[in-house]
Length: 554
Image (cartoon, rainbow, N blue to C red; front, side, top):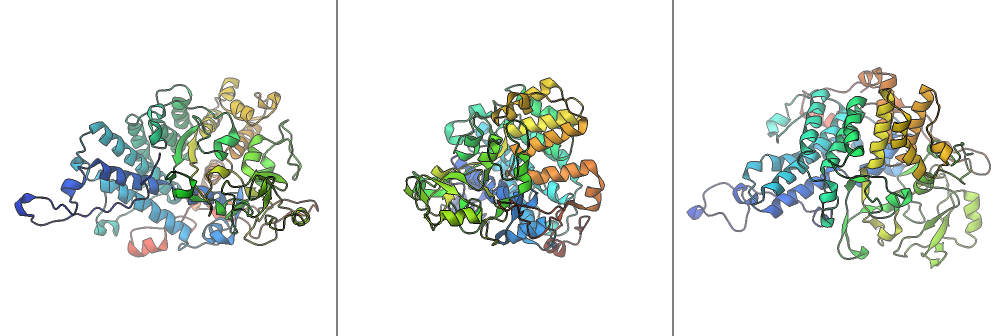
């Protein structure tokens, strides 16, 4: 969506008292006239879109998994992943507050829906359905992280908010599934959207989110049913894999029909006037971005990307890999295009700040290259302002969308058709229905796009445990650094040990490592993982409302 005004703050002033001759004031809004203007309803809707999901969590949720290790610049997230946080950690408070702020915006409109009279009932119904989608998405976030939480379908009074008791997560999830089913029959198809509405939620978005919700519950039967709606027909939209995995992420709008839900950004005219963007400086190599990287991909993730003949590569053998590796990871000696604004200080093949440059994360290699270009500054040096592991994120780097200062207007994909195929493949396997035909619908096209040899793409003859591991690893590679890994780790842990949820145990306790470089010495990250299953109910909320309990493990 070209959310030119998505950043607007909606100020709804409700006036009471008498007005001469029953006239509404011309310089202020009331409930009676605010909701009669379509632009006001749209402004509230767009604010809810902005609150629904954001680039910060899209990127930083990677730190909560074994795919990435965080730096001190995001200590509130790194503290969570390493298990040294307490119930007053900002990450927990912000997740809670962000969700309930979004719900307040949604309910501000839904509570007044009987007053909305914009002269277009179809447009009204659609906007209300989009708000309900945002509500369902938000409750899914809350239940996934916190379990039982306060549940409202309208804005509570102050007194109610301070005395409410949590609603069981199972009841909230039933509501989420029901809402998404209803919404999917109201919203338009992706193929019916005009270009200026790209990014608005569709019936396919609702179906895909419902599939994700069932997957998070390990309800594979229902997850498969939702996936089939998007795979086997066009009633809920037309979706397909993009032809080029690299362009899918590293070109603005390079996703063809693969994107199902996106986080949208906007500019006025040209790249010099980005009115709403996201900061690339925190997620890219230092020479391209800036001095304070949020996270570094781990060697464990890098090792998951096989060579195209299906064999496992040596740790620093970066040749002949799965194409997804090159679109996702910046490694020692990789080539990267410099941002279009041309303000980078390093030399490219077309001059300073222009063209292609070589990213060196190995200190010895960079030291040699600095004889020609002293501005190179990507190598591992043990500090928290560069890579921790010898690797950087590359995914979602489109140099053509980056302005001077590092803001990018490139859309980020939150749900896509590739994920639907993976959800379907896992669901078919876990319900004992994985066949060659199912494989050919799901894993085969993903591997084919990734550049694997034909025999590697073909249906394999594997044991049950080997096939499960293959599907899980395929999911890790396909969705790497898109923020999904932590949720997979949590639900897989529950499959293996249900007490993880009931007792609040840790779901990740390994030691993250990085590249060995040429001397064979492997980088070992500072602190081991210690991610607990549940987020705690923030202590500040429990201080206000004594009816809120605390999650297991806290």
